[in-house]
Image (cartoon, rainbow, N blue to C red):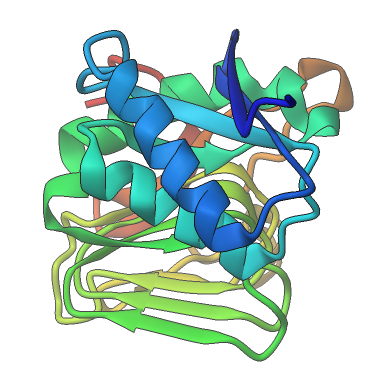
Length: 229
């Protein structure tokens, strides 16, 4: 008989092979049981996850993640797709930063936003996915995006200039921290005003986490490194 769930270890975390012939409710219980059996192995682990076999909807993926996190001490930080596995090392670096500075006081949104979406929080926000052009994220604390940030983002919305915005890639000039607007370098030079600088990573550099924060009264953007602060 075909197993309900098979767990395979990957460089980014775990890969679940799910029986496509089962009812989703039964499959969920099987996943919970499987993780309980392997509880000591995954204890307090922060990992990425991917799925195979069962044609899961986005809602079902979130339901499985919620079930795993409710019945175990596992922390699922992202859903990996087969064509995005190369980004796993970048996700791991950024995840360590998030756990240290954001997660304890942040809400977590699983999945990419859509144009027109408007996510708001009085605390920090962690987005597991992309923020496309036309989407908006507003947080009283800091914002961390496990994906591309192309939309509008405001951190420190209640006046906290110690907040910051971090993402795997940032390609937007629509950033604000507290009351300070981010001014891309080209615009600043044209207006002869001081402002932040906009650093686009070179194509050959590959994915590189970036962070925007306040320095000397201006919002600046730079690559994230472990010794940045």
